Image 1 (cartoon, one colour):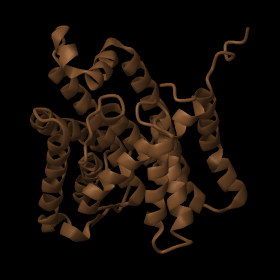
Image 2 (cartoon, rainbow, N blue to C red; image 1 turned 180 degrees about the vertical axis):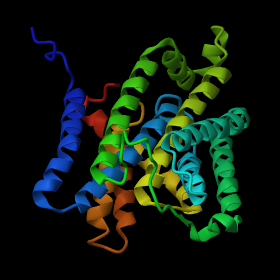
Image 3 (cartoon, rainbow, N blue to C red; image 1 turned 120 degrees about the vertical axis):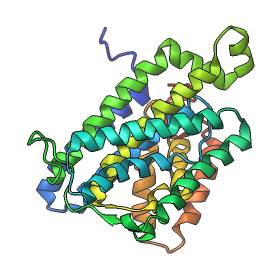
Length: 317
């Protein structure tokens, strides 16, 4: 019997989508339309951010409305050193991950003392505090943002100035994070996180310190999103506080819910659907967000686990 005979439809979709993404630069080279490469690069970077949010939202039940803050931290970890003509990619990536993890640790220690609507509001409040803090710093452009003259340098091993190399760096990063999160969710840590989402009180009665597990999950999620922010800063060559506005967090939530929260590949499908619909609908109608809203309502009503839930007949990942 073939080892692939027991694969569910969602796994085949994951493989198919990743193969298509791997072939995008080939299609672009043949067609000569480099706009598609830009769209695909943005899609992959936001997919990484959505995958990180899914770790706490889909698996952990922690609805964060401030997750875009880590995108901003990661982007500024690239932009601020670049402002001082420091383009060391290893330093910038390290700063992005460490600072995002530290911000997640400090804010998560407070946010996770709350539940429900209070958790949602306090995560958004911390994000907005960071947003307005950066708006007030005129040295780094304030509300106007900051242009990044050169992308991160990696001692000649990787040239992010080449759009194709940046694309594949983002794609490989996405695959690595999908693998790591998949292993993490299947481990005891992931089981506790999912159990906490279902019944926190019962998990505590079994002897698990659910607060520490959730905080660790929150920090991991923030660190991964910070890495995505560093990629985003390199991709756009521009950073601004607008990257971490609460509406950006809403977009990440949209991607997770649309694709399927609590499924490994769902956020990637959600990010792809979001970006492609945005590109198509924005060119057709000024009020394209209205259609977006209708689509989300229909998905919530008829596909409880999003697009990936439809593919797996309602079963979890």
